[in-house]
Amino acid sequence: MTITTTTLERVTDDVFSDLELRTLAGFLGGYSGLTGDAYALDLRQFAQWCHDRHIAVFAVARGDIEALARNLEDRGRVRATISGRLCTIACLYKYAVEEGLRDQPPTVHVRRPRLDYQSNATGLDHNEVSAMLVAAGLAVARDHALIP
Image 1 (cartoon, rainbow, N blue to C red):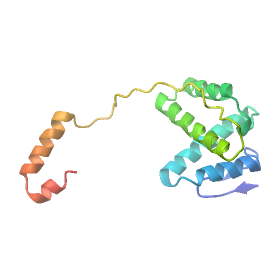
Image 2: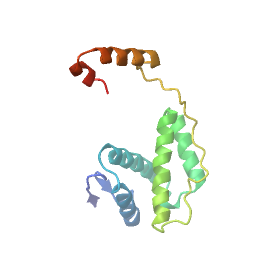
Image 3: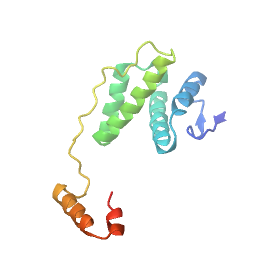
Image 4: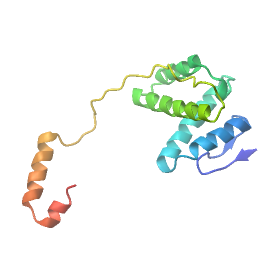
């Protein structure tokens, strides 16, 4: 049987039990747009990983989550992706605890990868931003309005 919703696209119950499906839908119901889509993708991939290892989603242990993180590393995923995936999973288990499906989340003591706080994004440095703001202040009102 295939269930289709806006956030859980074509999820089959050979991967999810009915309880898991209801819980995942309830959790994802709190999110919309790109956030909901990203969380749904993370959780579908996590559920598939669990299914491939014959582990029920709400029966995983801390070691299973750590094994998932190592698996993602071995597959070449960057630290930010791994950390984001673990964050999504942690949020799901927090929700499961709030709903009474688990006593404690298995993600409590899971080690997450360290992230570089230095951004590699290309952009203006402090001096360039200052120069742009000065130039905008000296320009006509229309040009000045283009600078936030």
